[in-house]
Image (cartoon, rainbow, N blue to C red; front, side, top):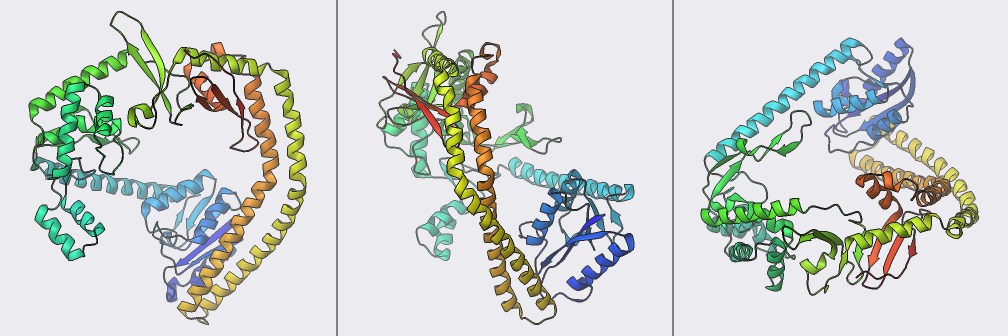
Length: 540
């Protein structure tokens, strides 16, 4: 069996039973006894097993596993490869995916046998229990804080501040740590409690007032811009931010707990049912009365209902750009009355966000979509266009040939240099083990070799990519022409998602003005290549 040996010590001074030499000797003796063939020795000297610590040899070991160069990973103890049970299990799952077994020789753990797998499954169950107990303890603490009216942390709602935020702001203003802490403690005596930000409250109340008057989040956003009001990050207000503010019960003096819960199957957070959410009176100041908040919620629910009833799918979403300002164009649906049909348009988003940046552009969605479909269908039948493929193929081959030969020569040189660097690294580690170098000298030389190796391999990777790139470009070019030539064959049978996927596979971007529609299509000789088709059309 082909084996990869992994050894590690966490400090340069570690000797005796944990030394690299002893680990290596034990592993090689095990291989000899069991008739295994050592393919490579992976050695991390003076490096911790913490998750965030970069271990070059472990990284190389994983690469060997993925490339199926080894069938077994051998260590003396499991903590040599990881001190985190979760990380260890994740790594062994990776080994298992590539049919590689794992053995810790001093702990009788062998995943190639049923007892080894049972032991690991048991360890996994213990780790899962520990995670659930930790989550439950955190949940209990947060539930207790919420029941006492305390804020549980997270993004500080606009209009409020905290001691920590005031401290950070003071530090940015070049205050000393002592001065910053004094200012923060005076303005917000208790940590992890919400206090009113007087400057933000002025804008916050304007948001509530404007929304009740206009009954429109977009119009509220536009009026904030016209008034010169900026968000906390000194940016133009976004409609999504305004929506979150209008829906947030924190402003009524309440604390909400249980808005999200962990899915037991996926381990991810998901929105909890309203019945399972807890609202209690908070210790922070109320910034809006209950009646006003109810009025806002009533308007929001009615607006949302109208929007869902008028919902329309837009084929060209994410592809359209306004020819006046370069902003994205999004779909909008309007009803003149309940009994009349809806009207759908693509509109420039910057007209709502920044009126001074764009005077606005509105195009009927049906006319624009029909034009784009017709243009692509005609292009799929254009023999002159389709014949351009052979010309482009020949151009690719002609331009790539000289560079390809030189690249292969450079790769041979780089491979030789890499072997030399690896040999020097092994000699350096051996000198360290024999105590021929002090720690400082070793670290300096080791880091330099590490950087040289990384640069060498990065350069090799780029050159390999170039060598492969000609074939990749040919295949991509063929695929691009195939997508275009087959565009009209089954269009009418595709569902909406299929039509969107087909359109986005061909079109990179559509730039629209009142006079022109510029359709840029992918011709992937490179990822950024495109061809422009610029017909004129009446979009009124």
